[in-house]
Image (cartoon, rainbow, N blue to C red):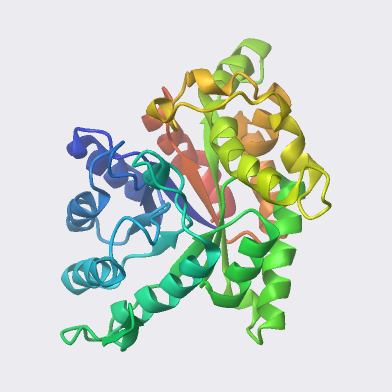
Length: 337
């Protein structure tokens, strides 16, 4: 199993670079960041510094979207980083939640997202693609490589992932839901004539390593990670609006907990102490995140690995960033890597 570190690009950018360097020293192979231009600093500028200060780390957004940049600009940016530092980028992409909504736009349609996946990959790898009805090719690209991994929850998005994407990003670490969604992606890949095993599966969720499993330690860890249930709840609310709460198309294990959701304030997006997450119960934190001593993390990750998960990406947005990176490097990665 590979491991990734996920950060927000809060200033100073030097701190983001420092944490990514620390992650590489501890055995992490991927460095991911949020991509929301209003809420945080521009990630692609920071990727250049991360790549310059590491040797093996692959970097990319978790996730970008087809609406905030034109597709040829996105492709050229990835290709430039690859040309400078070797093919060490991954394009994580989705419909766009905070990046679009904070700017007053709706998330992109799945049809637009599917088209963008093909175009961005083709352009970044030096092939011609059609952009707004015009043929475009970036002539200076040589031996470009850009895997495109799609974030998804709902049935139509999972099917699109299986048909088109090189990887699947699932932003929760619940084994039941992971099994259901990985099967959906792989079935869609098989139906499209692809090798289902060729789709890399990346589960991303907060991890908080405690010294013991005392009630006080676990309560603090839950409070530091509860924001994640609110972030996932944004996507779940979209699914409920689209399919209905009891449609049978989305597992009730994913939808039931948002019934008391009262809205969401993006100014606290992805941050510990987010006041918009008071509807998230402890049970959801325990299911969606990894909390407790290192042994508990290892046990859950082994289960996820058995379900076909290729990478676990640690959302490191809490009060123990360095400690969690070091604990994973000392105990968790050696047990799973």
